[in-house]
Length: 369
Image 1 (cartoon, rainbow, N blue to C red):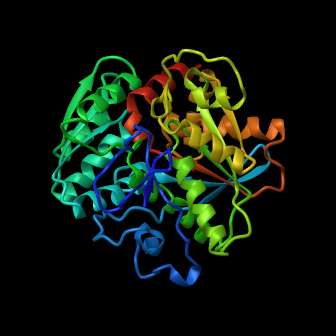
Image 2 (image 1 turned 90 degrees about the vertical axis):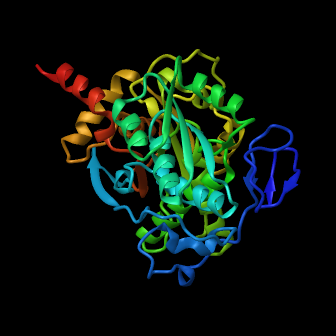
């Protein structure tokens, strides 16, 4: 069943993106699965289909099964999960494949999505694969490569003046007439991101790390990881869930400020465009997830994100700035004691710098001696 914040329950098989009270919906926790239930014949994250609440025909492009790489920064070994190995170049494919598969099974033939780039291009691709018409709303400042990708998949892209929040607000207004398939609102998108937890568990020999480090805008990865690891605990597959360590850009860090009881601050433009969400719709749930796991949150200075992007690139990892903020966050968490030297930590690199070419070009100009 689906539940809203008041506890009202809704059937899983009826298209719905929010509750009658206007709050976001969540799928009730599942029982998880054991290693014997992983379908190793499937070379995608659908190998964990037994952990999903609905059995639907997959609309799949081969998402998931991304590498787990080991690097060392300042003497601290870190496992890195480069999510640009997903079909459209970001982790958003994990949520889109499940969400669009469910919508297709429910008979939906046209959807609306709002995105700063990666989410829109992902939904556009999976809608194309499903034969569903897609309209994508994006901020006018969105990276051209991301807009181009959405249009190439056949979606109608409309650019909205103002910041990322203005685009979200416009999408909610239009949701009255078009089926809203928002990666921030739709409950089945989180059923896709939770499978990242299952994949990390399998990557590490069916064990859990001590901590998972994530960049965060609206928090779909945070909530997905909490759900997935909690289900693994429920199934007896792991003894405890890892701590969730969350990074936001200092220019737009509403969740970090609330977590640390700091005064509100109006957002400023940030190079980490994928996490520039001024009013996350699931803020309460994200904060609860971090606290429940004994995790922590940090705001990354804007001036540290660009150098981190180039530092990762010079180890062979071409991560977009949104992803690269995990590197200064890693160092900050270690300084404050949220990470210990003997911790096994997985940091998620959410998307490719190939989709932020203009931003990286500007960084390289600035980096010239």
